Length: 550
Image 1 (cartoon, rainbow, N blue to C red):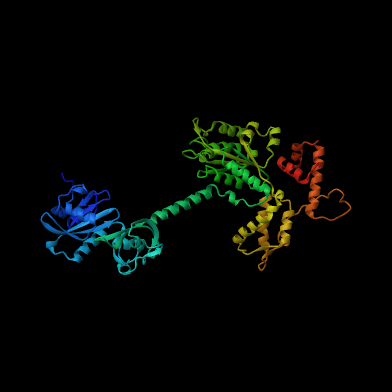
Image 2 (image 1 turned 90 degrees about the horizontal axis):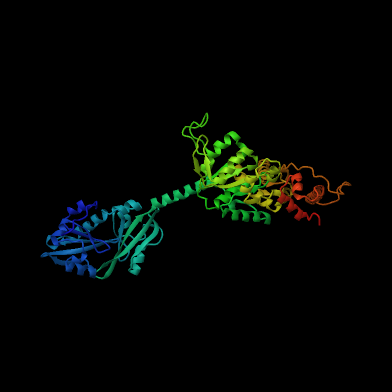
């Protein structure tokens, strides 16, 4: 039984009204479409092998147009190749069809296609285009027909010319076409007539919308990363061995799921390191939630960390609310100033870290959470533990991967780099471009102790730019306004100034002071670091730097 033509083609109804017979064959050799006029010349079946032998010979020889006799009717056969489809147009010779009518038929078929089609002759001059082509490129027939094949190309090389040169089809070449530079993919195939290359037919797929959506997705992802993890390791400025060692240790931490404890003085960049570790971890596409533990009272802390149900307390939001742990699920929770947590809050936090689940305020059901913890503190946690103000079990849970961030005074070689960065950054904000720095400024910045670390350096640079006169473009010492504190005299310096730079005098005094405190503590370095109010790591660094005790 002859198969019925598929009814899903939108142009089938139109083809039924044509005087010519139309047959469409797919790449598998199956007849997928024909009209009533074609059935007058041939009884259709799905198998191409059951086409009349004379039509099969024409297809094998690629001899188009051709004249054959079918069902005692003398007909002409023309062919149009569109991608993987082959269209046969059958015309009764007795009807005296003109070449113009054949051209109109081909044009009608082309115009019915949703993809843009371009046909050129053997010399690469435009022969035919369809309506979809003019819509896509924004160019008219007058601008294309009779013009070179590359007249529509805004970026890229003509695929038509490549096909005409090689005689082989080309698929999926990206380029931009038309005055609006639309992104397209072009596929072309040779047109063979009587065994000779007579031109090229190209199908142009519009991908500009896909490209726009991909770009929008990329921008959205960048925005999400900006909102959730604003900084990467590339944002950390400095080349000193001490800082590079710290960055390398943080990179190692990013590759593990372990809890990280960032330690350092105020303003040393603990939040920047937390963002960078998250961004370089496997959780980078998930949220990074920051919690300032010092800003939360015991009453607020539980509901903020673990969330609450509707009606859990007076003023509770309708429907309840997720806590920070749930918001950070599969991501990272950055607990800043962890040393300021009360013992009660520490106990609740420890339970979550041990059990991997939270219970909302006003609810009895436990909810599983998968959160990576990065904690930060400028407090001496060991001293707090000795005083009973910080839980030892929580300390060991958090201190799996400790990272000590050096204060600015311990990496003076990085200060000029940081100063230049902030001069450029704030210069753009304040409209003070092309500002330079006097060499003496760098020396003075490196000699200062920076108790406020990078935050203080930012403040000093910003004020220096503000203090620049309207016609000034060089920052000098007078613009800095650094509040240098008085430096105690080194041993033997009571008789007056005996030479040496401020840096040398301060280092001599610092070495003497450390040796005095160590003697006072009987060599106990932990106690000495506590009295000096510096970290134990900083003390060891200074001992090595000044060779104390040698």
